[in-house]
Amino acid sequence: MERAVVAHARCGSAASLAAARWVRPLVATGIVGSDTTFSTLSLEVDRLLADGRFMVVAGYGLVTVVGGLVLAGIGSTSAAGLLRLRRGRR
Image (cartoon, rainbow, N blue to C red; front, side):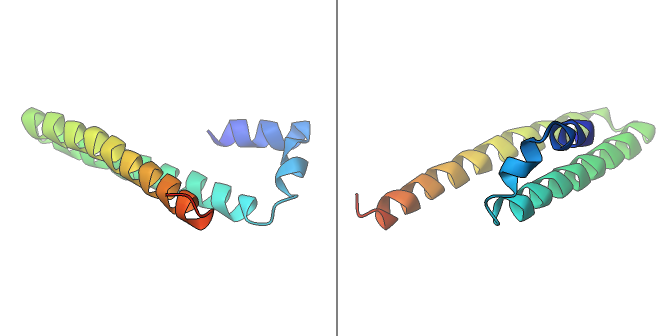
């Protein structure tokens, strides 16, 4: 993921991102947040596997992925609703 960001920066597409002041902090937060979340998930799964807790790993993985998708959907729907309200539509 970090390589893709560096590649985009070298190609000049980062210059277009600089036009909007809110984009850079948003992208940086997203990249750092996803990296730390993935690192934590990887570490927890590794420790559980080392302890031989295979069913816990399966449940943890399932809840993490499904829960993340559900919450992303809720966030997307909420953001779309707020944008409609802000524009005066219902």
